[in-house]
Amino acid sequence: MNTLKDEGINMWIRPETAGKVAQFGNLKELVRLSKDLENVLPCVDVAHLHAQSNGKVNTTAEFEETLKFIEKELGREALNNMHIHIAGIAYSEKGEKNHLNLKDSDFNYKDLLKVWKDFKIKGVVICESPNIEDDALMLQKLYNQI
Image (tube, rainbow, N blue to C red; front, side, top):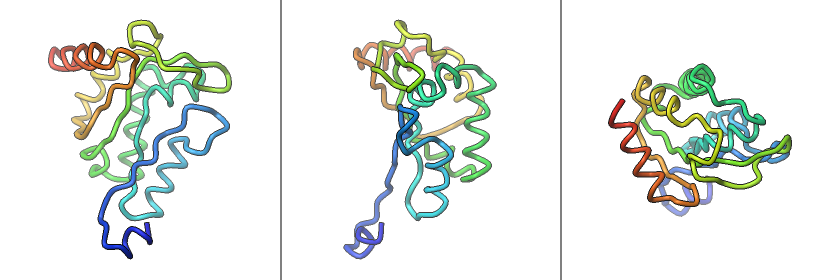
């Protein structure tokens, strides 16, 4: 960040939540990094959160808990400026194995979309499933029906 600042580059850095348990980058670590450094906010990869927890972070209450934690630690501004990745995911006790199409996974994306709408989050959502276009359009349609 200092190098960017010294070179007159004003940009946001978005470290992504890790998909594997042994990697740096769980949500708490990235929130702490965001508090310690200017122009840093987490890229919340919801599939990685699901995989890293070995199948948790998959209920309405857990999705709400995630957003409440971000808001409590980083403020409403962070929820108004989200950067999110979404996909289905295969995982083991070590975390992410590979991305899947949403319908081929156990990821509870329908309830996640409801929580996003309830919390009135803003920002960017990037679909990373193997069939990016189909899943992105499906998510958009479902979100608009809520």
